[in-house]
Amino acid sequence: MDYADFRRQTLPLGILGGFGEISCGNSILSLITSKSGVLSVVDLDERQIFFLSDYREKKRENNFVLSARGCTVRSLALSNYSMIGKVIDIEDEPGYITVEWENGSRGIANIGSVEFISL
Image (cartoon, rainbow, N blue to C red; front, side, top):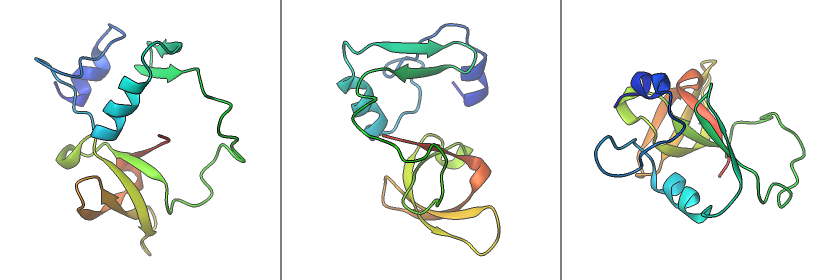
């Protein structure tokens, strides 16, 4: 199943193993499995899951990314779709960042081809 097919699905669930597996990095998979029994909300329009527990543990100073360095990102590019990485540098060319991916490789990515996530 590719990303476009995934976005067109009308059921609020994702299969993380077996036939029709959705590409999912180890850190996301371990986070989801640790949330067993936790209250969550499923956004059907955006196909997102929001976990409602532990939201007070980390006090956030700001909801906006002030500096991309050190942020965790998830790739939306076809070549490494759904890989998790850390931003290690911001390129001189506007809109590009250097990311170290979970498999140890590094690459330059357009900021539009990643989504910023918090794990």
